[in-house]
Amino acid sequence: MNSRLTKDNHSKQSLKALDAIKKKLLGKKLNYREIYTLMDEISHERLGPILTTYFVAAGFKEGFSQQELYHLTQAMAETGARLHFKGIVADKHSTGGLAGTRTTMILVPIVAAAGFTIPKNSSRAITTPSGTADTMEILAPVVFTPKEIQRIVQTVGGCIVWGGHLGLAPADDVIIQVEEPLSFESFDKIIVSIMAKKIASGATHLILDIPVGKTLKINHFKDAEIVADKFGYLAKRFGIKLAVDINQAFEPAGHGVGPLLEARDVLKVLEQRPDRPFMLEAKTLRLAGKLLNLCLSDNKKKDTGKSGEELATEILTSGKALEKMQQIIRAQGGNPHISVENLRMSQMKYEVLSSQKGIITTFNNKNLTIIAKILGAPTDKKAGVYLVRRIDERIDKNDILCILYSSDKWRLKEAVETLQHVPIYQLS
Image (cartoon, rainbow, N blue to C red; front, side, top):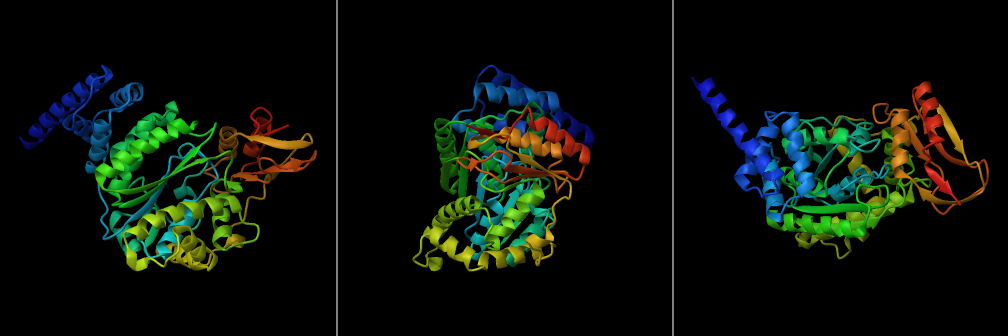
């Protein structure tokens, strides 16, 4: 009898969800109950991929009002598990689309070393050759239960884990599966996705990185401002202190693209190596500084009289960030003594030489992603591209532009051939 009642209830809820999709397709606004029903059906995978796609397409076409965005974010967070921490809980997110810019893995130990809780759950690669979780997995395991994450964070103050199986805002993970083959994602969807997961993670203070560029997710500054305003609205509604960093990005801030190459970049910065990627370091310190300013403004006991960026720089250059990262790696089951020398790159490589003399004027991030994925990233952890040259550099004929790495000689061969038609660099 109970199972029949449950089936009847599910059927009624599915019909309500279907009515809500029809309503949205007609351009009408949805109320909270309709949105919650949709998120509940999607999160439990009862709606099916076809109807989920209709909902995604309706939202992409018509967009959502501010009230609908609030309801969507709230419903996404409430239909899944939630993490709970006391006091200030710091977090960071990027709208993404830029390969080889692994700021999170440097920022987390800096903020944790400053004495603030920062439980970072990150994604695997969706549109880039490596996500933060893929890169962190080079150094330590990233798959944990919510209880294990609570223990790790209580022990060392922070973590860098994969959020894909935690059940935080699960409807979002289903929607991502629908969107990925179509290669589209609306600004509203990006906003809801990020904020729902931050709320489910218990974040109270958030730095949002919005890179803008021709070949990134957000192409124009006017769009970045719209996105920032919507984030600001939601952050205020949910009581989250928000700092936004809108920045122009012409090329990756790091040298490496691909899990192992990006992990090497992170360790070079933390270890303060002379050949570290200084653009990556500078961007991380700026973001960490803004986040620390937010946290310090609400915790005067930790205020040293320095600006957030000055404090972040001191923590990094003193070795405290490296020490904290080693603690996080140990707590997550990795080798805390791992160093750049331990991360051996693939022996199969190809040096891409310049066919002419000139100045590098343009860098194509989309083509870089194509080449890195052909090489095998992120599944092949050692696959990727090492960027030797940067925009505005003057080069001679036969200078090395970049180096391709793969564990598969056929993938390496295919990438070399493809590069002739989808070049990463443009010279003048």
